[in-house]
Image (cartoon, rainbow, N blue to C red; front, side):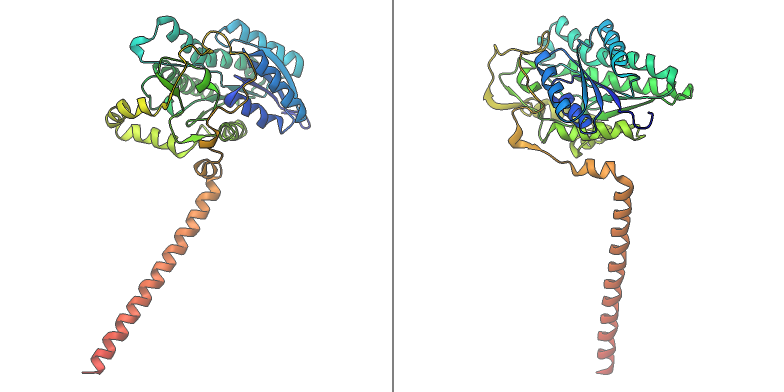
Length: 350
């Protein structure tokens, strides 16, 4: 990026949830941000927040499941703001339902938005970034890209697909010696509006599987990943445990989630079976970044802080280890001296 030029950023799913929090994070730095989503009310709310923070916003109502709409949006961004520096693929939908009760149309829709929307966004971004040999694409993933859970088979399949697609593309970029960078951020359970508008067949109110984090934690990680050369970034200890645990004992995870995966995704309160959902059309209104679980959500992640600053963390842990080793040696030496002194007194008293 040229000196003194504001970053040009595209965020899909920008009207609410993680996307809305990401928009705010870039707006703090006066970026020029293209806002892509279906919900016009949320897009206008995001535009107002960007402009009040000193950035520039371009509202582009877009269904990312339509490749023509995504390509048209990308062209509009560069016509208005110039070359795209960062493209964040974040848009998603889900259905909370046993697979046996889902329809083919529902499964297809989740796949088209959550998986193919990322593919189409990546295509549009690369079409512009590759000739310039610069730019960054951030894929917003999930712990569910590694460890699937029941009742969200289409969404989990899409997140697994994003990871496989991204790994394949990364190898191609390396082969071509391209300086375009692609990274993936794996997120934990987050307090976003999706649990109030996702299509559901569950008897009770859907919830993120605890522990729950605020979307600003995700936004911090996504902004950081867009500006640092990290292949992949995992956010929160629950994400790390899910990924690593699935490597060690996938069969146990299957068994455990057969029970906890059902209760963990619902509160004790019944849900209105006729509530509006956003699978096919956006739910009207500006829903912001946060969901209904503010009182239970964490605004910080110790793991993320250590992960973002792991060189400093490693140095600190090294210092602690050295100090601990010195202290242990001192205590052992002191104990040995006391033992020797006691033995000398016993010998002299004989």
